[in-house]
Image (cartoon, rainbow, N blue to C red; front, side, top):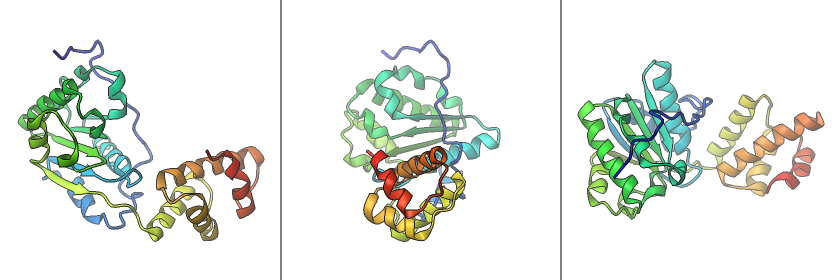
Length: 231
């Protein structure tokens, strides 16, 4: 039986910097229309790590909050240390987002809680957005009815950025952080540091921190020196 948690609500951290404008769509321009169009009450977004799923759903959550509408967004990385009862009564929110739902596959308590939440959100005519690394049909859910529900709405595969898109993202993120990233440096990061955008953004954080500590501009020699901090 799912027990009601002691706390009625729980605030999970949102990426406050995430918005529709700083999402580099690449081949994913169509998803922006579907995600921000309220004619689509249920969306299931899947894609590889680094495709931008969390950024995208965080942008949607921020959009709702700016309109003074209630949001519950939970990264399912927290599920292992929490009771599924946290989902009770969350249907009252205008938007509910569960990020990385594949992480609870096989946990029948969480699967049942999400199944019931789905039905309640549908009755309320609110919005439910879920993300995962795989298409729902390839996730090993133990509850067949949950899989059926997840296939009722719109399913969209978020595709990884190509190299021009990654370069644009790196330059935009660096500008947002307060420094300019030359194209030569961005290409060096892409070719010699990592092609994974999550790792590249982590390295940008390292560059920003180390440049502040050393009081140095971010040049290619400085980038090479900072590789020692990238593990």
